[in-house]
Length: 286
Image (tube, rainbow, N blue to C red; front, side):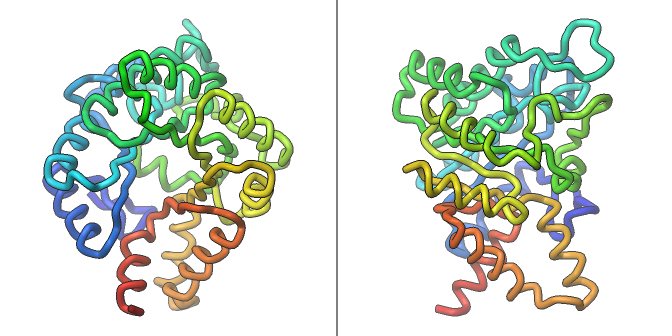
C-alpha cells in the first residue's frame, strides 16, 4: 500500500518485505529498521509484544533468509495503541496524558520479544524517562547482555514527522506528544538526555530530525564519545521528493548533499528513506 505523502514508500506485507529487502541487499545495504502495523490496536498495545506479532514474524523471516543482515527494530507503542500515543494513558484520560512508569514495563516486554525473535539491536523511540535502563535490565536478565540499544535520546516534537504518521497510522487521536518529546528551541536539553541515556546503558544515540538539527548532531559528537545516528525523517524525505517531482531540484545531488551534511556534522550512521537510492547511486559511481 503506497504511502501518499511519501512517494516511493509503501506499507509492506511480509511477502513484499522479502522482495524489497532482497533488492536492498543486492544493492549493498547491510542493515534495516523495522516498524510494524498490527491488524488490531488496543489501549495497552498488546500486539507490540505479542510473540507472533507482525514485527516478530518479520524478524524471524528476515534472519532465516539473510542471517548476516543487521535487523534493528523500532521499540514504541504508538503504532499499536488505539489512541495513537507512545505510552499508556492515565485512566480516564481524555487529553492524551501518558503515564511514564507503567509504560516502561510494556516497552521492555516489546524489546525482549524482538530480541527473542532474532533482532540484532533495539531502538526505543518512545521518549519515556528511564526506558533505556528498563530495557537494559530486562535484556540482561534474559541473557541478552550483548544486544545493543540504539536510543532515540534526542527526539524533538517536530512538524517533520507528519508523513510518517500516515505511514505508521499512529497520529494521536487527542492531545499531542509535546509532554514527552523535546522542545525544538531547547538545545541544552539534548545534552542532558544523551548523558542520561548513556548512563542507563545506551550504546548508540539517535538525533531526530536531522536536517534542521545538524547543530545538535555536531554538539553531541563533540561532547560524547559514542556513535551518533542521524535520522533523516519522513518530512525531510517528502520535501525532496515533491521538489524533484516538480523538476525544481536535482534529486540525486540534493540527497547526496544532505547525506554528506549529516556525516560532516558527526553522524556515524544515517537512517533514511533514501537508503536504497543512495546505495544504487554509490554502486554506479564505483
